[in-house]
Image (cartoon, rainbow, N blue to C red):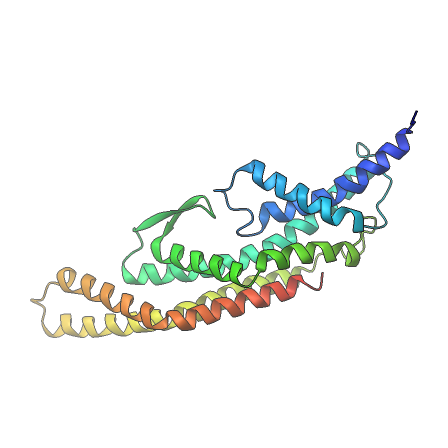
Length: 255
């Protein structure tokens, strides 16, 4: 008859539970993987399946009681690491949505919204378009597999039993936010420049011929010019989105 001590049981549970906390935090925050349209059971099953594969490769797991303060501190560290990796990609996706929102606002489509299942909210149509395109490019680049490989590799660079590497670099967070706005502006700038030129021409026309109806001419013209500019700038936008995703994934891989 087999006998297990409480210490052995706690060590066995910790060897699986601590990695599960980090992986579940990644699945719950990373784009595409954390899509609100997917059932919660599917996300939990995905986190458990990844843990079942990665768990046996994790070394130096602390034998701390899960109900103790030390165990809670270890759980908190794992959640912070996994959430940080997922939020790095989510912030990049926010840049694409923000770029689409700026374009839609200049085109006069600020009130034309669609339900975005990734963010569980109403999003302007152009922002939703760029968000869906970014998700497709993310999958085409095997970004979901790269995230899973990155979290598996993170157990070597940031072991569960070690608190090293947990110092928060606030300057890096500020720079990441700045890069988000730069990326969004780089994507939206060609269309915004075309719309700015169109608005300047319409302003001169209204000034020279006040009898023209600004709302009858300006809105359709702005919409058509914006749609044409978006059509011609879309290939460059896709390239910028791909570069942004590759850069974000490159910042995660060294973890």
